Length: 146
Image (cartoon, rainbow, N blue to C red; front, side, top):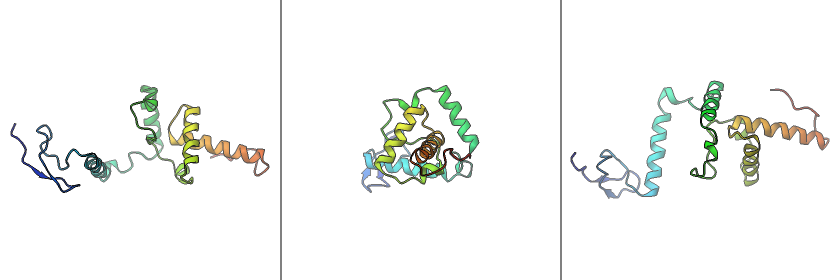
């Protein structure tokens, strides 16, 4: 194995010598540059036609449920960063106002349901929302179906 030649990092524009085990590296080892490398890699992956809808749709919810069943407690693992994102997106959660209070509520609901899938958290949120409205005399006593 020959030593890779020095090159310019695509992020910080500084010269670096890639690790011999990753001779085609385009980014240096600085934290900011590693994050930029990951973003670029994820963007390339998502731009492939077969990956564009990888995280969307009912069949993917079932795929994630099966994976989570095979890996119980994974999302609670202390190695993961706080604030990590769930695998599935739900339009209902994305429509909520992004604030620390909403983030705390979502975290609470995920811990109470034992499920970090946004679909589950969103359903629980809206059930609680309609129940609260009914208690306060602001809406129907039963949450709408759907």
